[in-house]
Amino acid sequence: EENCEPCPTTRGGFCRNIAWCAHRSDAIDGACPSVFGCTSHDDCGNNQYCEGCEQCEAFKATLSPSMAASWACTPCPTTGGGMCEDLRYCQVAKDGIDGSCPMPSGCDHHAD
Image (cartoon, rainbow, N blue to C red):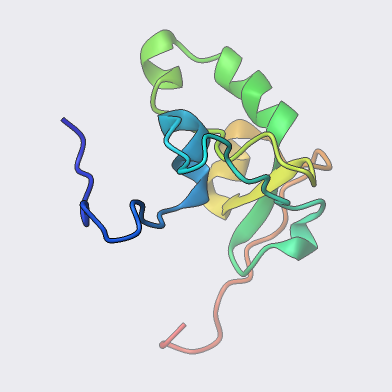
Protein backbone atom coordinates (compact mmCIF):
# COMPACT_ATOMS: atom_id res chain seq x y z
CA GLU A 1 0.00 0.00 0.00
CA GLU A 2 1.26 3.48 -0.87
CA ASN A 3 2.24 5.94 1.80
CA CYS A 4 -0.35 8.72 1.83
CA GLU A 5 1.14 10.82 4.61
CA PRO A 6 -0.27 13.23 5.89
CA CYS A 7 -3.72 11.73 5.21
CA PRO A 8 -6.31 12.22 6.35
CA THR A 9 -6.35 16.02 6.05
CA THR A 10 -9.11 18.48 6.91
CA ARG A 11 -9.47 19.64 3.29
CA GLY A 12 -9.23 16.17 1.75
CA GLY A 13 -5.90 16.36 -0.08
CA PHE A 14 -2.24 17.25 0.22
CA CYS A 15 0.35 18.77 -2.07
CA ARG A 16 3.17 16.72 -3.54
CA ASN A 17 5.46 16.93 -6.56
CA ILE A 18 3.27 17.58 -9.60
CA ALA A 19 5.41 15.20 -11.64
CA TRP A 20 3.68 12.26 -9.95
CA CYS A 21 0.10 13.41 -10.59
CA ALA A 22 -0.45 11.69 -13.95
CA HIS A 23 1.45 8.59 -12.88
CA ARG A 24 -0.63 8.13 -9.75
CA SER A 25 -3.89 9.43 -11.24
CA ASP A 26 -4.70 11.02 -7.90
CA ALA A 27 -5.55 14.66 -8.60
CA ILE A 28 -8.04 15.93 -6.05
CA ASP A 29 -10.44 17.13 -8.77
CA GLY A 30 -9.66 14.34 -11.24
CA ALA A 31 -7.47 16.45 -13.56
CA CYS A 32 -3.76 17.08 -13.18
CA PRO A 33 -2.76 20.72 -13.70
CA SER A 34 -0.66 21.39 -16.78
CA VAL A 35 3.04 21.96 -16.25
CA PHE A 36 4.92 24.55 -18.30
CA GLY A 37 8.29 22.81 -18.04
CA CYS A 38 11.07 24.39 -20.08
CA THR A 39 11.84 25.40 -23.66
CA SER A 40 15.62 25.81 -23.39
CA HIS A 41 18.52 24.95 -21.09
CA ASP A 42 18.50 28.56 -19.90
CA ASP A 43 15.13 27.92 -18.21
CA CYS A 44 16.77 25.45 -15.81
CA GLY A 45 19.03 25.90 -12.80
CA ASN A 46 22.71 25.15 -12.29
CA ASN A 47 23.74 21.64 -13.22
CA GLN A 48 20.38 21.02 -14.87
CA TYR A 49 19.34 20.84 -18.51
CA CYS A 50 16.09 21.04 -20.43
CA GLU A 51 15.28 17.44 -21.24
CA GLY A 52 13.01 17.20 -24.28
CA CYS A 53 9.86 15.21 -23.57
CA GLU A 54 9.83 13.54 -27.00
CA GLN A 55 13.56 12.83 -26.79
CA CYS A 56 13.14 11.32 -23.32
CA GLU A 57 10.39 9.00 -24.51
CA ALA A 58 12.47 8.02 -27.57
CA PHE A 59 15.44 7.14 -25.33
CA LYS A 60 13.21 5.23 -22.92
CA ALA A 61 11.91 3.14 -25.85
CA THR A 62 15.46 1.89 -26.50
CA LEU A 63 15.84 0.51 -22.98
CA SER A 64 15.06 -3.00 -21.81
CA PRO A 65 11.69 -3.28 -20.04
CA SER A 66 13.34 -3.47 -16.62
CA MET A 67 15.51 -0.40 -17.29
CA ALA A 68 12.62 1.52 -18.87
CA ALA A 69 10.55 0.96 -15.73
CA SER A 70 13.06 3.03 -13.75
CA TRP A 71 13.55 5.80 -16.36
CA ALA A 72 11.05 8.59 -15.70
CA CYS A 73 9.92 11.16 -18.25
CA THR A 74 7.53 12.84 -15.83
CA PRO A 75 6.00 15.43 -15.79
CA CYS A 76 5.91 15.13 -19.59
CA PRO A 77 4.15 16.14 -21.65
CA THR A 78 4.65 19.79 -20.74
CA THR A 79 3.46 22.99 -22.33
CA GLY A 80 7.07 24.04 -23.03
CA GLY A 81 8.06 20.67 -24.49
CA GLY A 82 10.68 19.82 -21.89
CA MET A 83 11.43 19.47 -18.21
CA CYS A 84 14.42 20.44 -16.09
CA GLU A 85 16.49 17.43 -15.12
CA ASP A 86 19.83 16.74 -13.45
CA LEU A 87 22.61 17.38 -15.97
CA ARG A 88 24.25 14.00 -15.35
CA TYR A 89 21.46 12.29 -17.31
CA CYS A 90 21.95 14.33 -20.48
CA GLN A 91 25.14 12.57 -21.60
CA VAL A 92 23.49 9.20 -20.96
CA ALA A 93 20.20 9.81 -22.77
CA LYS A 94 21.35 12.54 -25.18
CA ASP A 95 17.87 13.99 -24.84
CA GLY A 96 18.48 17.72 -24.57
CA ILE A 97 15.56 19.68 -25.97
CA ASP A 98 17.75 21.23 -28.68
CA GLY A 99 19.84 18.11 -29.27
CA SER A 100 22.71 19.33 -27.10
CA CYS A 101 23.91 18.92 -23.53
CA PRO A 102 25.10 22.10 -21.79
CA MET A 103 28.49 22.20 -20.09
CA PRO A 104 28.42 21.71 -16.31
CA SER A 105 28.74 24.98 -14.42
CA GLY A 106 31.36 23.52 -12.07
CA CYS A 107 32.42 25.41 -8.99
CA ASP A 108 34.86 28.09 -7.87
CA HIS A 109 34.59 27.63 -4.07
CA HIS A 110 34.74 24.62 -1.79
CA ALA A 111 31.23 25.46 -0.63
CA ASP A 112 29.90 24.97 -4.16
